[in-house]
Length: 292
Image (cartoon, rainbow, N blue to C red; front, top):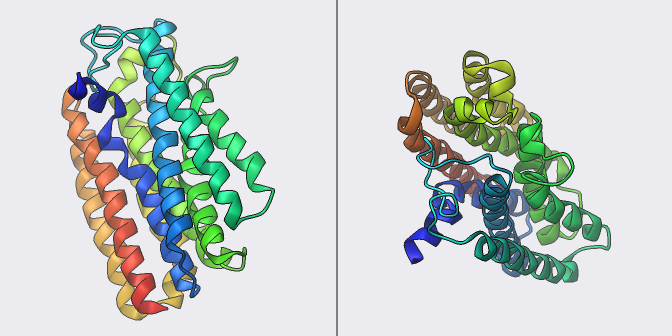
């Protein structure tokens, strides 16, 4: 049973949450600020919120008849009968409550306006898959991912450690870049599931625009992420340019594999896209430490 819950967590996607917090911590360090406790709270909150979203996606897609056995993507415990729907629903809301409690603890390090932002993040964790207008069903999942896995975690992690928004000149371009890389993980997911999604009326961006267009978007997003950070690269030693060049090289090679693969063969590419994002955030952290 433990294996089934690990599958439901979707560990290959968790680096997406971790990367944003690491990048935000790097921005705080670059601005001569670092505070371990809020950094850990941000990491815990981001991870719990993503797990809750993954659980909710599995439960609500099953409840709405959008999942079927033998799908091309990762195994869904509820659909395959390994986990009961009620158990998954309870797990979703329990994990979401844990995320909310963790978010409340960050208020010790920030201001009151964190409350509506935290509420928005909690709502997004469910609104991605359910509600009157599920974001993932109407081509809005990519935009939401950029905001909630890029802009929000990077800028807020930096803010909570530094105690001010003075580091926005660094954290904002970094957050947009991280958001674009996170959106690429979703693109691979939807690229793989296009036929299944179309058959049940789920309109992801890949269903709307097609694999060819979104394959190009995947390529451009990775390159654009590096270009958006030009103001940041300019503040670092010249050797820092090696990081975006390394990432772009890895990214292009993975893009070629993605556009020539289909079905379950895209699962490892999804995991590698997420791991490349994590690798980039770690390289960025090192640059911020040595370049401050």
